Length: 381
Ligand code: SF4
Image (cartoon, rainbow, N blue to C red; front, side, top):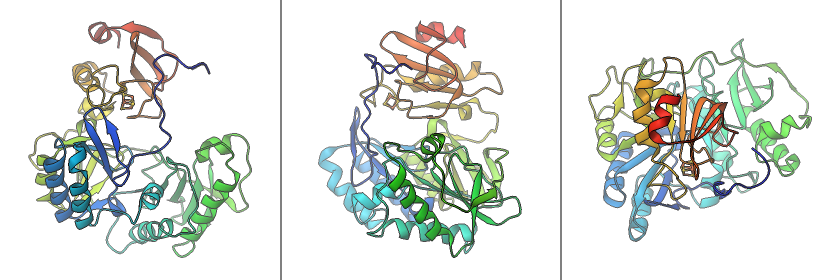
């Protein structure tokens, strides 16, 4: 994309909504809940479903960072919703701590293991007054299961396992990490976050800073273990992974899921139902690993988002049966590309001039074709 602003350039707000700092959207307030440890106990999931139905429009989005966004919240209901979230212990002490607590945790952990401990310790460290002042989208990944699964998800500071099984701390964008152990990991992660805050200049993400050639502190010498696959719906050691088309579920489905187990959030538009052995029969769940809807990212679009230039999800459903078996598709209501910040094999972006088609790129990249209608794009992909 050129530097000159386009007429339909998206509005960049520079902050992320939370529960304590909601965002006004086309369908009301968006209240983003960040489950602690990436997990909802059954009572929390059930309570959250009731709150979404009582104070919002009953639709809930699972974000690419594993957060749950209650949509369509009425402004006169907001206070009661916050009280309800407080009662469910789903709130941080204040909006600053909430904004900093950007932690993505692998869902493949067991009670009492290092992943559970590290996530809790990192949560605690980010709540301290001396925690670094970080940009809004800056985040952490606790990816310390048997093998890495979060490398394709957005994060700036990563805790992972190297091939020999030890823990490493790896800045996003670097191939090498620093050897840590369960006792030193969080202190080292905080030091790296402080280092980023002191050296970032105008950069907001770790990989962008490192791409400038900025040298890391000493000690980052351990080879990373590459992620080889992305999880799919079905049975895992910890429970059943259930897919959600476009990451959306209804309050009713969330309440139904709560009957089957505690829920672990993922960045893959799936939730893990702890301890479940079978896929629950609930509306909106994707059980088939080859369901094309799993390979399509589509943002809220019109009418829910005021910046949207198209109805993304209706178009995505129409395109799903046409998608070749291996292909990923991103349908974006505007060039901001909220649903999929990374490149996709195919991206369709809504613009003031019609639909643009982009190959192997992001929603804001220069298109291969422009000016399509929803009808003509069906033939173009
Ligand atoms: S990408 Fe979609 S959700 Fe994000 S601002 Fe644009 S239309 Fe709205």
